[in-house]
Image (cartoon, rainbow, N blue to C red; front, top):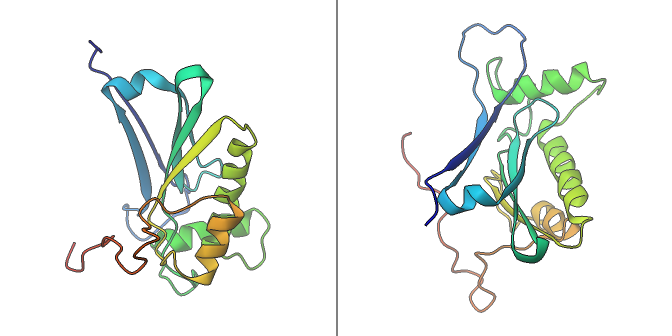
Amino acid sequence: TWKKAKSIITDCSSDTSPTPRTYKPGSIALLALDRFSHRIHNSFQDPTGMGRWVGKTLTGLQGQKITIIAAYPITQEDAITAGETTIAKQQWCHLRRTGMENPNPRKQFLNDIGAEIQRLTNDHRHEIILMMDANEAITTTNMKNWISDNSLFDLLHDPTNPNDRPPTHQRGQH
């Protein structure tokens, strides 16, 4: 029998700029429990300090690697008008401090996580499971191209019935 075990990795923005209140939105977590926690090869997080993703690489039989990534890009297209206390504004300010004159945090997220996926998949014995609330339908041209460019595919897609996707959210109050 396996010992009860767990592995948790979390990340949040390390932005220290002052805000009008102590609460700062934005964080991500990934848990591995029981048998899976014994297979963890390594854990990692968004290297920028913006807390956009976390991941765990598990080693399977014969050295096969599977990396599971939990990711969350911002929802706002225009971070400047998003509001002073939003994660969009935090990321916009962070990117400005790195030298970008007119940053687009949403687009930068896709570029950065795409580069991380490419880095991981350079090892041909490495598979990726990306769990992402993209805040955009994966049927848009932008997301279709990004998915294709990163050699990903939609596990929930049924090619025999493309209009029968399971709901990914429920409208209502949080």
